[in-house]
Image (cartoon, rainbow, N blue to C red; front, side):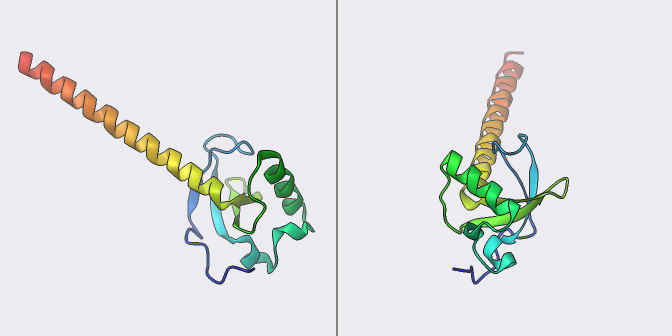
Length: 117
């Protein structure tokens, strides 16, 4: 199946937390892989497809076509599963919430300290 619509994050840069990349690596999503290449990555004709297939198998990622093609900061292309992007976004949201919570706690403590004099 070739995705009929572009990936919703095509053109956006995402920060990954994945074992293939240094933590904090940024990848710019181009589009669903099948839309760019006109076929599934599972045919494994290109090195990027073979590398992704080995990685996906080793780390238990779904072997489906919910994958995107992107390029990192060094302009190296890679295939990412949609779940990897969602996982990175979830961690970023949790970090933001934790930061907001810590900020609120610090503000509350400063307010108490100011009241005491």
